[in-house]
Amino acid sequence: MEKHFKLKNIIINIIENVKKQDFLVYFRKISILKISNDSITFWVMSGFMKDNLEAKFFNQMLASAQSEVPTITNIFFEIDIEIDNPSNLNVIDCTSFYKENSKSKKNKSVDLKNNNSVTSLNTNKVRDRYNLSNFVVGWDNQLAYSACEAVCRNPGNSYNPLYIYWDVWLWKTHLLQAAWSEIQKKFKDKNIIYTTADKFITEYVSAVKKRSIERLRLKYREMDVLIIDDVQFLAKKEQTQNELYNIFNLLYDANKQIIISWDRAPKELENLEPRLRSRFEWGITVDIWRPDFETRLAILQEKAREREFMIPQDVSEFIAANVTENVRELEWVLNQMIAEYELTWNTPTLPRIWAQLKKLSFTTDILGSTRNTARTTTLIKSYEDIIDRVSSHFGIEKEWILWSNRKKEFMIPRQVSMYLLKTKMNYTYERIWNIFSWRNHSAILYSCNKLEKLIKKDVSLLHEVNTIRDSIGL
Image (cartoon, rainbow, N blue to C red; front, side, top):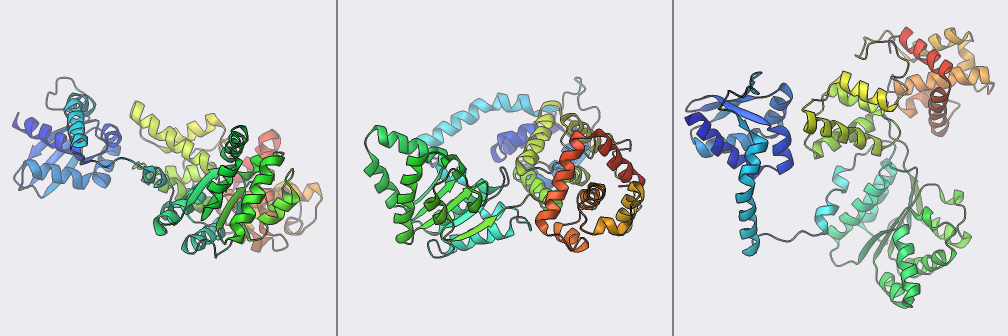
């Protein structure tokens, strides 16, 4: 009974020092196995819970234990497979326990507010989600990141205007909002505005209706930094384009920093006034490529770290190898894993993630495969083994795969080789480029994407790719 009383006090202390979501997700049920003058051993539900408590909440648990027993110097966790047994009265159900204590916690919060000891939230809390420190840099976005970093150091004098483009959900918004946040932190005296083309259009239309165009122009004229995201939505909006053109000129002539994002290069912009397009080309244009395997893995792990959720390494690598389209999909899969754990307590495992991705058709890696989902020992030693196997399968000479012959009977084997090197061997585009030296990075990326689209439509081609892959143990 004494152990249970001490555990209650320890849990109460933990509630005060751990976020509600973390407490409800990671603590679940807990009891004390044994306690001595210098250590406490806790019973927990699973190995996943044990690993998380040890990795992320060890210090909080130790401090809470020491507040109850000052002589404690260490804590331990062990798994109790009988912890759900209703007859065990020494177990604390943390969800119920939290609800019982939430009322007093709310009262404390109200008292703190009344005493003005809690500062009001501001936009910094929102902006902290996007900053340069948690932006994962890979070869695909290195130039864009470096350009933004330079602009943040010296806005208005470095790379003005800065034009960033590429496909949706590849962290453009993260980078733009990170630049916004960084400049605000370093230059508190500057007027900075971050907006989207949609919001700018709405603002302009509202100003026209209220006959307050001059007020709108004055607002933007006073800006030191203007950041506009998703400018593609200005297409066919001639009057709004004209207004942006005037604002652009005013800011540029005054050496005010302008950052713009679009989903394509300036020269490819359609339904945009030529004079506005030419303004976008005055500064530096940088693009963000689709992230490679290493970058996707780092992004997934960073996102999981931010959510304080541990993912086994094999699961992380499997997701990064298969969820290849964009960052939003990686976040979606991560959210699915967290939600499943919160609702069912199922920990992320390779078979479970494999089943989910197969059901959602995220990847061709798992469609039509007859192999076990666990990683097999590779039977290949180099890229030459893959190219030899592909040439043998399609019955063509190896040289026809490496050379630039555009006949279909050679293009498909060539694309299969590149695709397997990228997705199964985790080769970078540069490395593949060196193998097929007559092609550039764009051609390699196009070939991989082209084959990925083909095998989603052509079941027979998918079967051939899976056959080649299985035959070499990839």
